[in-house]
Amino acid sequence: MPPLSSGSRNPSAKCYGDRFIPDRSAMDMDMAHYLLTEPRKDNENAVVSPSKEAYRRLLAEKLLKNRTRILAFRNKPPEPENVAAANPASSHHAKPAKQRRHIPRSAERTLDAPELVDDYYLNLLDWGSNNVLSIALGDTVYLWDASSGSTSELVTVDEDSGPITSVSWAPDGRHIALRTLRGVHEARVGSLAWNILTTGSMDGRIVNNDVRIRNHVVQTYEGHSQEVCGLKWSGSGQQLTRGGNDNLLHIWDVSMASSMPSAGRNQWLHRLDYHMAAVKALAWCPFQSNLLATGGGGSDQCIKFWNTHTGACLNSVDTGSQVCSLLWNKNERELLSSHGFTHNQLTLWKYPSMVKMAELTGHTSRVLFMAQSPDGCTVASAAADETLRFWNVFGTPEAPKPTAKASHTGMFNSFNHIR
Image (tube, rainbow, N blue to C red; front, side):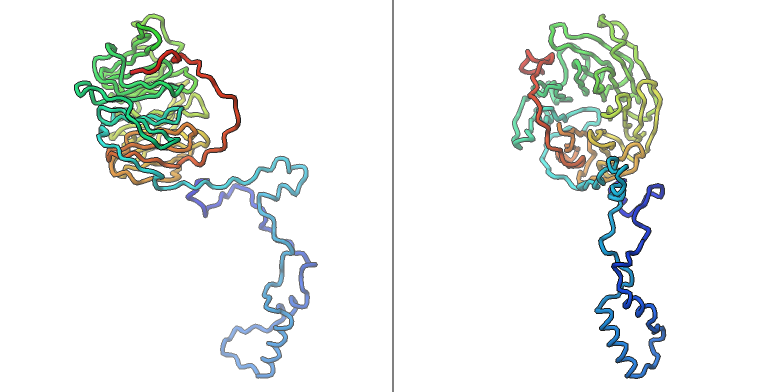
């Protein structure tokens, strides 16, 4: 049940505790008889003799002793969630009632983000698995360490090469990509996604790069007539989704890859043209591998859900404003969206009903970018109002279970940095 609907009831749900079965041993029968036979005083102006009134008061004082209830529980009635425990056969199936999560409507922390480029097609914010957040402000990338709260400058590019148009952490949290590798694209690179490093550009092309080798271009894809503004690999690394300013959404599968960089330029598993504006907001579902959520720009304003195996559109929800970014809750079936005009809000939805659970406000311009903390609980949002805000929208992190420290044996171990 959404937290906002605290007063509602589910008519189909089983109700317990409504039937009252009195416990006679807990009753005072003399008091009960008196209350049941006491004359009614329906007329407030009725005349009663002084002696009768004195007798009534004395009788009430002796019998009632300030009590007014005829029937009483000896013990407090059981709570609904405990009723099943009374049956030994079903007690092992009983689950403790889940408390509603409090969702703060205001940001926990706000940081200044001067020179944040107000451009819908860029991707300037990412939160790495090392718990360090990266943000591109003009020609400089800054790092904010969430563990210590410290800020540092990572790199500044030449003015002729700026501004920086995209940043993305590698899965290991030790390497970060800024814009592109040289000589790959003919225009700015606004989208980056890691499995191998995939880049999307204003030239409409998507390139897979293996950064471990000198000739790093592994695959080149075409299919967009305008800028590529969204790229996301699925959690399994099996599928890649890409969205463009030409309102198109493509799903590509690694099984279609070729060893020849120039082969299969226009191959895709699905080509989807249901959105009516640029498709930038992309989010793979963490609990269903073939479920993808996408969001459209100002002329579309819809969140759509796709089965990426079949290409079927499962649902479409009109949000009423430009959809800039999407994030799934890793612990609950919820989706968070960020928006532009008119309210510049973050909206939390319950999936699959798509009932609004909360709207988070505070930004005064469109909320262009969102990133999620490694524990999945905190969301950072960056907006055209040049502020970076942190929201405890997905709850409090659970205490980590003790595990053996993982060693980084990924494909990027031999590199100190990637630019």
